[in-house]
Amino acid sequence: MQNELSGPRFEKQIERRDFLGLAAVWTFFGTIIAAIIGALKLPMPSVFPETDSRFPIGRPEEFPVGEAIHLSSRQLWVFSEENGIAAVSMVCTHLGCLVKRQDNDEFICPCHGAKFDSAGKVLSGPPPRGLAWLEITLGPDGRLIVDSEREVSAETRFKI
Ligand code: FES
Image 1 (cartoon, rainbow, N blue to C red):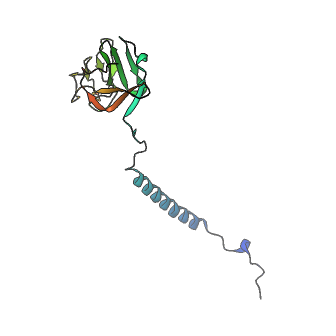
Image 2 (spheres, rainbow, N blue to C red):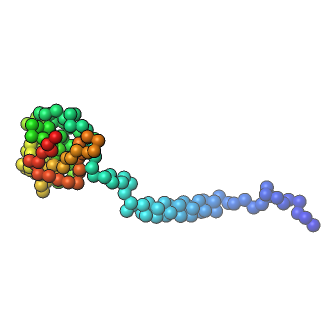
Image 3 (cartoon, rainbow, N blue to C red):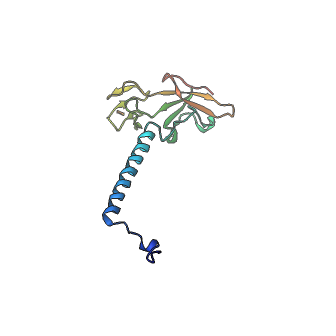
């Protein structure tokens, strides 16, 4: 004889205590899985460095003689003088903060108070060496190219 009280409506319902127990177990495993995924992603950089250290900064005529131009997007100061153009990195050689150029042409690092002279040499503070002067070349399209991985002496100028 078939039971007349069958069907999903009459199946035994899960008790609240069982439901809370299952919810705790699933939350535990969900947390563990999320932690494992996070730990596996940790060694991978979330921001990839620029693949090319060379980048254009503009045409030579954009740097009139006697001007010092701050290229904040490239973290550079570009100096154009009678004897050529030079570019100095604004990245402090201590821990990588961005230095600021003062009215007296010196550079100050806001992080640990380092001071650099107008040629980028360390005057005071913890940096192990002076600011990096970067190589400038002329690209095939007539724009000046700075290579952030090729340092030159502070006296080097790119002659146009
Ligand atoms: S980062 Fe510039 S002095 Fe420390």
